[in-house]
Image (tube, rainbow, N blue to C red; front, side):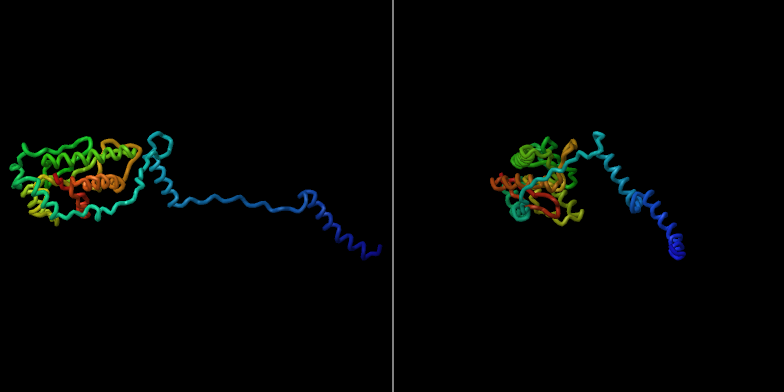
Length: 258
């Protein structure tokens, strides 16, 4: 071995020893470890969202399980075209009311003959709204028809196993004084010749329904109106009522034909 070869061995020896030492320590080719995954930094929006969710869970957490028990009931049926089905115009209502109702329109509330009319009060099926421009009196046949509608609505909800609600009657008999006050209030539907003046006509709102006690199950007004519309359709088909769907007044305007 000449001097040049000896010198080369001297130079390479440290590198060879270092390589062999690396194999012994690392167990082969070294691998870089993946850095630990960083946790997502919570933003203000995330914090608010969690707080709102916690508050909502606390409000609905009746049984302490952290879960809401409220259940919305949907009536899956074909939506009726209320404006087309209930389109008896006001002139027809007025003509029928004059024919079967009071012979003389009361001028003031003191003029109402309460002995010949039926007073309409709250019942298990019906709630009378706070009446500002009418009084809770109807002819005997109209009172019977209002009760029939309210009972049929209750029975329909029960048969369908829906939560039970009561109807809300929003307008009944109007005196001439009531009509004048209603006109002063700016109501465009106030008329001297109103079917409400003859004790045959009443309004049932379709935006509000009543029940005394809340339960875990509930229904939205537009779902309940599907049930009410079926009742009114059947009564109208039987010839017992005239009905007009009042979009602006949010009610069904109903006149008893008997």
